[in-house]
Structure formats: C-alpha cells, structure tokens
Image (cartoon, rainbow, N blue to C red; front, side, top):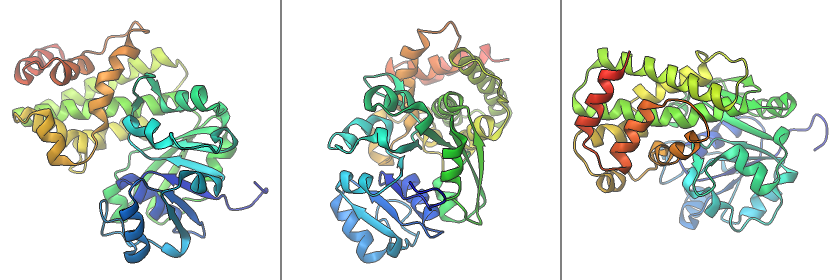
Length: 333
C-alpha cells in the first residue's frame, strides 16, 4: 500500500466480536469490507443497518461498509485482513478463498486452536497459507464485544512481530472508547487467549457447583501461574504475565457476565448436558474446543496443566464435574 495511506480493512466473520470491530473501524474514515456467511444477514445489514443476530442494538454506518458473502471480493479490497470466526470454522470459512493471504497483513482475533492441525491461528496461517510471520498479528483483550457496543472504555492489545504493521492497524482503531496497546509477543498473547477460555470454563463450573468468590480468587491465582508455566515452555521470552494482554484478559473472561465460556461452565456445573448448553447458548464457547486440543499440544512440552486437565475430563471423558473439580480444589495453592 502507499506510504501514509489509510489502510483498507476487511473483516472475516459475522459474530459479535466481528460486529464490534466493524463498528470500531468505521468510526474513522475507513471503508471496511465485511464477509459474512449468511446472505440473509448481509441483506438485513444493507437495509436496516444492524446485524440481526449479534449486537443488534449497534447501528452500523453502511456508507462505509461493503458487506458480501463473496470472500474473494472482500479480501481483494483490503490491505489488512482481520479474521474473527470461531477456530473450529476457520478452515470452512477460507475454503473458497483463492486470493493469496500471503499478500496481505493478517490479524487474528480468534481465541482458539485450529482443529485437525492442532495449531494456533498464527502458525496455521504461516504453514497452510504461506503468510510470513512479520505479516501476522493478534488482536487480544481484555475486551468483550458487548461493552464495545455500549461504548464502554475497553482496551485491545495488538501483537505483531513487525511494529509497523501493528501501528498501521492501530491507526484505524481511533475511537473515544478504545485504547490500544502494542506488543511483539505473538505466541504469548495468542496462547494466553486460548488458555483463558479454558480457565473461564473452570471458573464457571465452580460457580455452577456453588463455590464462592473466596475460592474463585484462589482458582484464578492458580490459573495465572499455570498460564505462565505453559507460555514460558512454548515461547520462552521476557514478558510480564500480569499485564493486560495476559492477566487482564483472563480476569474479564473468568468473571464477566458477558463471558460465554464462563456461562458455558456455569451451566455444566448446574448439571446441563453439553448438547443442551450448545443449543441454548446458540454461540460458540471457544474454551470447549480449546480444552480438547490443548492436551495434544501439551504432549510436546514438559509442563503441568492440572486445571486444563480437569476441564478436559469433564468435557471429553464425561467425568462427574463435582468430583473432578473437588479433587482439583484440594490441589490448588
């Protein structure tokens, strides 16, 4: 792109966070290309200026939007591609893409692991789509889309090996209610975003089982230490695990009323089946898929993850939540 020009941005995904990011990007003079799978939602947005399924109270500036179900038209019209689809559906979302992603700057706001490949999104983009690492970035929290919709002050972390690319995206996120911070820790921020969803499931399960705030404080303290051990094993660089991209994102996901992972866990703790939770929520809780895949990644590293393992047993081994979480509670320090 031309030096000093306003970057053209495309957003891939039609959920709540995608909608929130579109709202942020269009606050300035950006024209945003937006891919959504559902043709009815596309037509609804063009006509009524809001996403009918997610954050429907947000009025979208359609004069700055090109909304389409044709992913190639959307990606072609951009310099920066922002991926905001559930990790479990990333491959399906890109299946018809013929425009090379390696020619774009690609930021991921996906908080999960790509199934089948057992890779975080950055590694998947590099290995499967040939995107150079310096053109890959991560959008991390702490930030819930619902509070962006309400224009409550929120923080976002933009992580990229090339600070120039991070600053380029930062320049397109100038809103009164958004503060952005930059980082070069792609691996750390992305793995932290994966793990915090699993820990939010644990917090929710305990809440559903009747454990109180005193215990939740102990749980989250242990989650921070477990996160630190794992990220240090995977990518050992100097980082402050207590900063907003790590601890802050964990706290809001574990405690917030808007956290779908905590909600999912709470329903598990109250005795709901996984199938009934998925039908009732009608939204993807990334922690469910992450818990099933982090175990495979863990095998490559000599690190203990008792909280992740306990959540895995409840979700995938059909173990009794009350018994599994009670045993875990006795191990926490």
